[in-house]
Length: 93
Image (tube, rainbow, N blue to C red):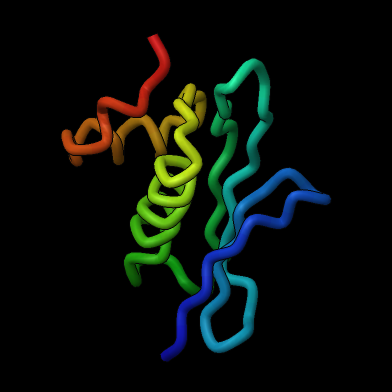
């Protein structure tokens, strides 16, 4: 199964596609060098398959590459960061 995570800037969201099919997304807002991660949604057909975690990691890896800090408004993203301490340095003070 092929997995692709991309930034759909026109809709202000990162998307994850599995074999070309949209499986989930994270909405965001960019402000003052910070990115507010507002909402994560995974299509019910893909729940329980690790899609949310893969999406969270992909989003955070991309934002880290761009040297941006995050404001994890979304409870899923905030919880994921708590479970992966190597991403805590990205959280805006």
